[in-house]
Length: 163
Image (cartoon, rainbow, N blue to C red):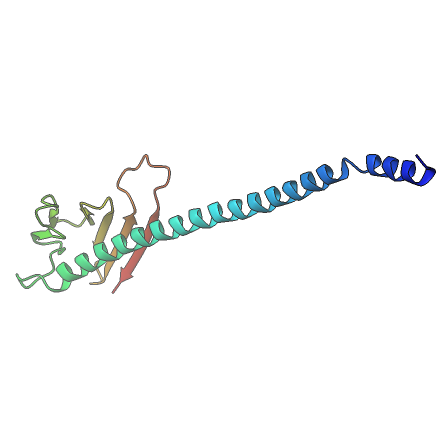
């Protein structure tokens, strides 16, 4: 063997592990990028879900408010269903899935409070109607994405109307 051929063999043997090192660095970098993308995707999915649940709670509160406004202004008996002099029976979203959505309101100076369910969906709204001495009405509706108060992902949104 001449001196040049021996040098090239030694040079090749010194560089045998470099390919493995480069492969590990590239794989690690790709794994890091993939983990960051996955983490961002999971956070976005959670935020999207929270936004959707917040909308459900708001729509439940809005529906409860609309029901109270209807019975305050459009009661077929000609007076407000929430008047302090006469008690009334109202229904909000009452159908075969929601037979319990019938409430007795008014007839006292205390605020009228009732809970509207939206079965088969888990949403509900707690509505409070206050008739003031100056002939103004205040309606506060708290909407929930679930009626289960022990649910840690329960969202509450409120709507308040005064007229």
